[in-house]
Length: 376
Ligand code: V47
Ligand code: SF4
Image (cartoon, rainbow, N blue to C red; front, side, top):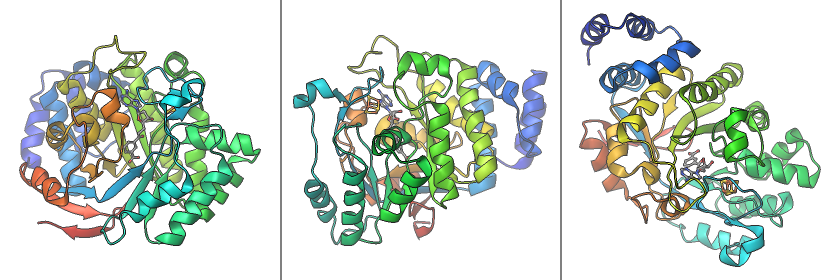
């Protein structure tokens, strides 16, 4: 959409508050908390989409990033009991779970020898026996085998638990992990920061300040990290904006976040199964408002194994400029929670064609958004 088209669209909005917000976006002025809530309450899908797409195209043109990655999920045994989780098996039922040894995880890494993957994403449950020393050994073993492979691993949920158990400070723990080979942090474990909701859905794990502090310390060490929101369950619009506001403030302070990834709550076989899943229209609005509110986040990602490849494609018109990677059927979190992607794998050709079908330019990136190849 050209600048003239979008200005006309904003000017012709019959709602004066939505018009004001639209003008702020066009002037590259920051929108405030109330603006964010109002966009959710009153913004039509087409209005939000046009504004978000304007920002997306101003920042990135038609470029849409993906990478070649695989996951390692060390265990699904977990000491915590998040009500939305379809994946974990409580420690008491650990016979239903899996636990991988360092050797087994290294074998997974070795199975990619000679293949052009650039990133391994390590995330799993919180197993009481998999402690800081265990993961330091894992990181060192992976780096010894394939030094250039970028390790994006461990959420503050896992890190907070292992640091406390090892009786080290966040600063010391992060330093040790970074020195052993941890390159960046994924965005998981954030859920909804507001304590009113956190108490109801994930009472026993690291709280908002703890989550934010681990990312802050990672940024201070020069690491880049991602952030997520788990939306579409019992949270209100103001809880969503509160979540984004806290991230926006930390990003102003550190500039260490790369990517924001809205994660749609999936309701299969968990303690929140009675809650209906959000509609595709709501999903697209969340991407669009994220793009508009998080003006200091370079990238907004739709995670195709969770939202499905067709909706990921659609999201490219609602502010999204990244759809994650090839995955190679190495993650179970979303298939177990009910995603339509039961064995998530896309090769590069499939990702490229998915992006090209909606007239965007596919660009393979590494984890830090260095361009590996443009498929223009
Ligand atoms: O924090 C768990 C979510 C997250 C469900 O940084 C669920 O590039 C929906 O953070 N329905 C972990 N979501 C995954 C994650 C992630 C994924 C992809 C890319 C990146 C990145 C990070 O999975 C958890 C939680 O919010 N989750 N259960 C569920 N039923
Ligand atoms: Fe454990 Fe993570 Fe599941 Fe919570 S979401 S129960 S921390 S695996």
